[in-house]
Amino acid sequence: MSEGDRILSDTRKDKGFTLLEILLVLVLVGLLGMFALPAYRQYVERGRLAQAAVDLTAINQAFKTVRLKQPAQSDSEWESRLQNITEARQSASQVDRHYRYETVWEADGGIRRYYLLVLPRAESSGQLSLWADAVGNIYRCTDEAAARKRLREFADGVGCEKL
Image 1: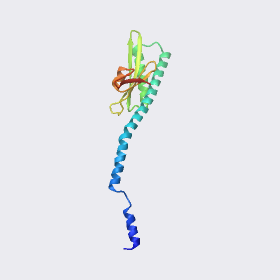
Image 2: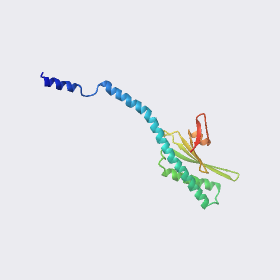
Image 3: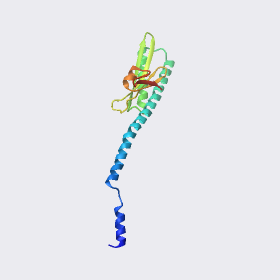
Image 4: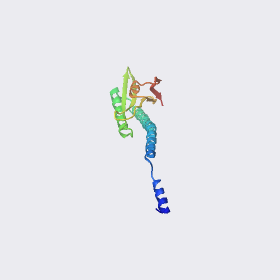
């Protein structure tokens, strides 16, 4: 073997990665994914909730406009109109696949109140919920149960915070 052949064969041995190097890279990528994926999912969920909050504001404004234009209607007609406005907005929303919108109408002795809820769908990976009152206050909640109770504060890590 000549000197040139020996130098050429030595350089060929140095090319490529060892099994240990490849395993080390795979472990590092796995660790990075383990920490980055949950943070990314939270980021995406908060973005969807921001869009849902915009939808709640639009529903609230549209319903108030209808009430001003046609003030003399029964409670059942108001409830039906609110439901129709909510369904129309949800079907046009970008978050429709991940969240469902619900309305709660309460009429007690001449006092009328309504609430708007944004709740995660069962097939969605999200957990956070929103609720809004007729005044326009919007609250972000830790889960669906807190939104349904319309909590206004946190206790033991569960509850809602005003946006």
